[in-house]
Figure 1: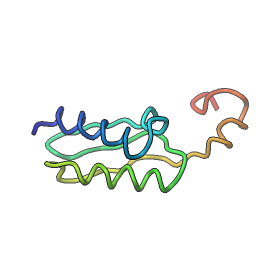
Figure 2: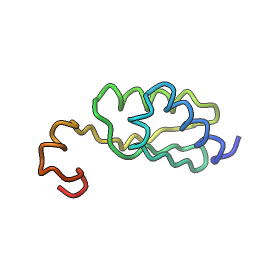
Figure 3: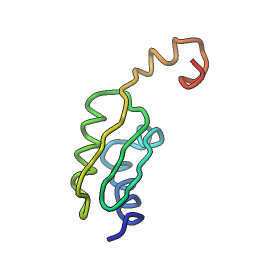
Length: 86
């Protein structure tokens, strides 16, 4: 399995196991079996679950979890703009 296959399989598993709404905010990159997760999730549970799902994918040798937990309430209350704007 190559890095593209790892990324594709992981994105599919994240959609089914973590939830489609969370997956749209998660970026997945794989290089030589090292998976890097980045982006935002709405809970520490979702962050941990995404890491666990990544570790379970065959040929993944290490997971770098750079996901940030951001409360959707805080982001929405910020200024009414997207969280990247605030």
